[in-house]
Structures are given as C-alpha cells and as structure tokens.
Amino acid sequence: MFRYSRGVHVYETDMMGITHHSNYLRFCEEARIAWFFAKGLRVASKEAVFSLTVYETRVQHVKPTRYADMVDVDLQLRARGARLIIQYKLSVQGEVVARAETVHCNLDQNFKVQRLEPQLIKLLENEKWTETWL
Amino acid sequence: MFRYSRGVHVYETDMMGITHHSNYLRFCEEARIAWFFAKGLRVASKEAVFSLTVYETRVQHVKPTRYADMVDVDLQLRARGARLIIQYKLSVQGEVVARAETVHCNLDQNFKVQRLEPQLIKLLENEKWTETWL
Amino acid sequence: MFRYSRGVHVYETDMMGITHHSNYLRFCEEARIAWFFAKGLRVASKEAVFSLTVYETRVQHVKPTRYADMVDVDLQLRARGARLIIQYKLSVQGEVVARAETVHCNLDQNFKVQRLEPQLIKLLENEKWTETWL
Amino acid sequence: MFRYSRGVHVYETDMMGITHHSNYLRFCEEARIAWFFAKGLRVASKEAVFSLTVYETRVQHVKPTRYADMVDVDLQLRARGARLIIQYKLSVQGEVVARAETVHCNLDQNFKVQRLEPQLIKLLENEKWTETWL
Image 1: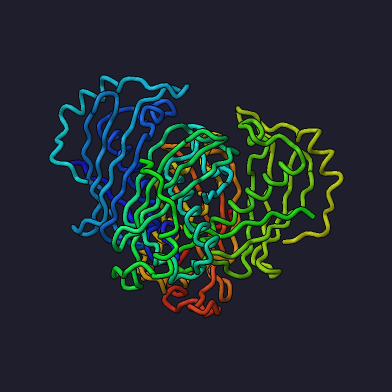
Image 2: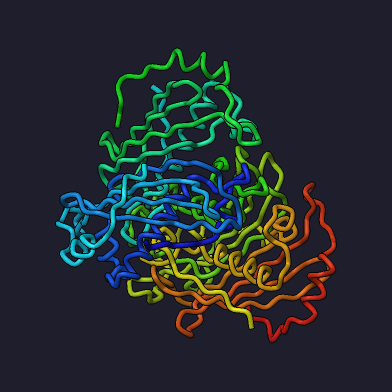
C-alpha cells in the first residue's frame, strides 16, 4: 500500500501545542499528489491540479499530533461515477491519529465537471479498496 | 441568526485562482469564535480554546470562492451529549458556496474529555437548530 | 494616517503560544490591500495583484502577539523609481509589536517589470512619509 | 554545506500561480530545524523551539517559484553576541530564487533573552560563513 510520510512543522502547530486541525487537509493533499506522482500521472501542471478539484472533505481526529511527529499517511482510492474518492489513515509510530476522506471531481478551467481521465480510471481498477476507513 | 463575514485574502487563494479548500476550516473557526465572543463566553484564553477541541470536520463545496469575495458564515449550534455540533452555511452575495460541520469536545489540558460547560449548554438551549444543513 | 486592524486567529498561533512569525507578512499584505481599497484603486482582480508583486520583505519583532490580540497596522508608502516601498508599524493596545517593510514592483503576467501605475504615483505624492520606521 | 530540499505544495501557491511570499519564511524555518536535527541538537521540544525565537527576518525574491518546484535551501550560520544569524540561499535546479536572513535569540519561557547555548556556539565555530548572501 502507498504510504506518504512527513514531519509536523512548527508553523503547523497552534497555541494548544498540537497540529492545527486545518493542516490535516494539507497533509492529505500532499499524500494524494505524491500518489499521483508515484503512479506516473502528470499532476505537475495547473491543468492537472484542476482534475483533482475538492468537492467534499471529512476528517475524524483520534489523537493530537505535535511538532516533530512523523505522520504516515496511507491512502486508498476508488472511482464512483465521475467522482474520485480517496480515504486516508494518518498514524504516528503505528498509532492512528486521524482518518479522512476527500471527494474530487475533474473540472475544466471553466469549472465544469468532466469525466475522470481514462488513465486514472485504469489505475484505480488495480487499487485495493479494503474497507471503509471512516 | 448569527452571521460572521470576512473577505478572502490573496494568501488564501491557490494557483487555480480560488480559495484553497483547507481555508474553509479556518473561516469556520473564526466564525464560531466570533459567536462565542458575541455571546460573552470567555474564549480569549488558552484554556477556553481547549474547550472547543475539534473532533470531526466536514466540508461540502458548492461553488469556488475567490480573492476579495466577502464570505458570510451563518452558523447553528447544538449539544449532543458531551459534544458540541456546529453547522455552517457559507455564502457570497446570497449564493451558498459551501456547507460545513464541526464536532467539538471539551478537553482539559491532559486531553481528557470533560462535560460541556453549563454556561454553554444554557446558551445552546436558546439556539435555533432549523434543519440539518449537510 | 491609514490604520488597518484585525484580531489574531487560533490558527495563526504556534506551540509557543504566540503568533507565528510568518503571519506578520500576511497581516502586512492585508493592510496594504485595505489601503488600496480605501483609496479606490482597483485591486480586486488578478491583474491588480500582479501590480503589487513582492520583491523584498523585512520584519523586526519587538514583542510577541497572541491569540485574540487586536493588531493595529499603520502604514506609510512611497515610490522609489519603479518600486513601491511600504512600511508598517504593528501595535497592540498602543504598544509596538513589530515593524516591517515590503518592496514591490509592478509585474505584467510574464513577470516583466513595468512602471508603477500613474494613478498610484499620484496618490503616493499625497502620502506622508514621516521617517524611516526600520 | 548543509542543504535542505522540499517541493512546493499546491496550498503554498496563490492566484498568481506562484508560491506566496510568506511561505519562504516557512521554508527557512524548516531548513534551520533540519540543520539542528542533522547536528544532533535537541530541537524536538517546546523548550528547544524557544531557543530559536525569531527576532528579525529578511527575504529577497529573485525569481518566482511554482507548484512542484523542488526548492533547495543552503544555509550558513554564525553567532553575533547573544544572537544567532542564519542566511539562506534558495534555488531551483541551480538557479537562485531567493535569499533570506533570520536573526534569532534564545528566549526562556518568560520571553527573557538568554545566552546562546554553549553546545550551539561550539557548533557554530566550525561553520563556514563564506560571505554575506544579502
């Protein structure tokens, strides 16, 4: 399974001494883009980023994370019609700290919904969707 | 109904020319804290912020927002056991751009769940919860 | 003198309990754009934002600021050739917390330097540049 | 020479299609903390972060950076009395995109200036300070 890892930066913490909750959506974005890069899909352009427009997000927090924690993000992906569903399991040293889901659609530059790209759909067919994580 | 308004800043947009989705959680945080201030609840201290620890978030995007848009955030709140549920309707010039929900619990500084504060519960009893927004 | 005020948000603080230093550049950006709006200059478009491209920034921190502090930003502006110099004095309840300077140039969408806009130059002639703040 | 590298994320870009200038201070923070970790200095705690309180920052922008650019940050450090001076050269594929300087002091938790830690001073004696980068 694909795993993306990154440390928590000082500027991502807040006065409570923990990672501010809004940053989890940023960790998820980094993870899914890393997945796209790993699969050889072109996502380094503006057009490609459009193809991953965020339609819906959901995050469940299990435990706080802190500065210098190494956060591992596992993800699983599947298509649902014209939508791409991605789920994330975030953990620190083997302990789940959060679960998340983002739903995406492929917009053109006029913000009209397009079909998911055939190359992506083919890739998704080989992805293992084990269970619903949240 | 309580309404919080704020413009979108340049640094909140991204290369697609729209507000980055992670910032909606920040708009919601600003709105709920403005509500607390408006109601005279003490939320200007670290301890008070702890009492609003984020347990779960959900955002549904309806339309993109852009730099200089004035985003109006309407919110409704209710208690559910030891949890505080807040829903948000974000609109620009009368058009809904996003809906969101955040679920909070009252943690002490050791991250143990406490009951919601009696003063808050009393306030919530007078809040109108019209419908589920998402 | 033009003054822009805004409170410090939870997500702008860090684990030290104070406003993360990178956010001061964001406060300055908000303040200069508010100045442009107040003067009736069009800055609500992408093109207009280009005309304020950041060339150089400098921030001196005097005292920390914290969540819920109301930060007042005074600013003074002047032209220096094709460059726009803006200085900022940030204070909380009358006490200076930081001083800053940003230097801007007017880029077209190919990132080539243009002259400052005549309308802006005219406005700057009426601005009072009292002293160098840092 | 120590080098820290990291890609530019979508959420760090703005509507102009380039990295928002405030994020350069975050790249610098990441780079200096990576340096501390690499040298075996303890910076994973709140106390240690205090010892790097930001007193002054300066950034000169040479060229814009964009999403997916890999930014290399070279840095050089030296002591000046009770202050730590750090300079940064940021480049993408060998081309300088920005230069920066941050000045730090060692504050205790009451925000009183302390001497730099002896262990740090010793390390700085072995650092090469080639020239002033900005």
